[in-house]
Image 1 (cartoon, rainbow, N blue to C red):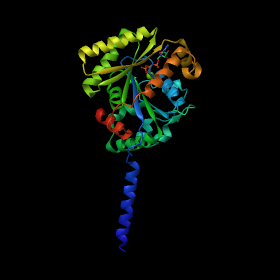
Image 2 (cartoon, rainbow, N blue to C red):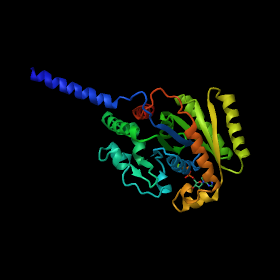
Image 3 (cartoon, rainbow, N blue to C red):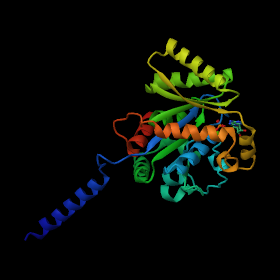
Image 4 (cartoon, rainbow, N blue to C red):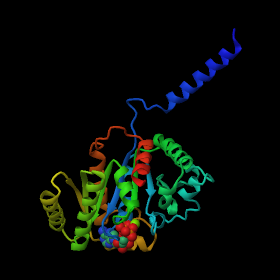
Length: 297
Ligand SMILES: Nc1ncnc2c1ncn2[C@@H]1O[C@H](COP(=O)(O)OP(=O)(O)OP(=O)(O)O)[C@@H](O)[C@H]1O
Ligand SMILES: [Mg+2]
């Protein structure tokens, strides 16, 4: 037998086998990537991400949080963690994604973004490929990926929103926060053709308050951005227990599970999990990261 041909055949089978393992099978479930964002800062994104993550993991979901806030990244604070490495170390090749992820005692895994995400636009092809490969491996290990974005309409926030399957906008009842939430949706729809958003109203005094915020945003969208749809996910009351939990560098769901805001977040987590994954043609993480890169350039 031709030995060279034999080797070629072995190599071919090997490549095919490797391709096969990377190829998504039709029934395979890919994680839902959900961005939690806002126009105005300080409206509760990080606390909402942290508590929703806990509620979802208690419901059996494997949850990963991406801390994509390049400003004052602080998901580590609410989980009382001190990350040593960030995505920057993955990009530079010093660490793997697996090595920088921190596992909380709930079993939630956190990817500390740090300044890593700020430099996404400057990555060379090799670095992009490294990052893509790392994220691809994550696909098998998560059901839900929550992205804690920064506030505002900086490009960094926008491309994470654009790349995610779903985009949850947080607003309080304050007029400035509502205006900024509208501005965020306007930019997302103009620049990235995002048509579908979900709303959580935080720090409310009553459900009526929250519905008023939803109505005013929906009316503005109806008038000026007809093709954009906003769905109401729920509201979270103003609750001093949440502030007390933050003071203790802890999460409300751990600290005071019976608090009104804790119960509201549990309900919202169930609502999200009961919803169908929003339609996306190619649901995989490589696709997600590719989209991040595309929108970032
Ligand atoms: N439901 C609530 N009831 C009372 N206080 C709240 C509530 N939600 C948030 N807060 C307060 O708002 C503060 C800011 O929350 P958080 O850090 O989660 O906001 P953020 O949107 O992530 O901010 P940033 O834009 O700076 O990242 C909390 O430390 C807490 O004091
Ligand atoms: Mg935050």
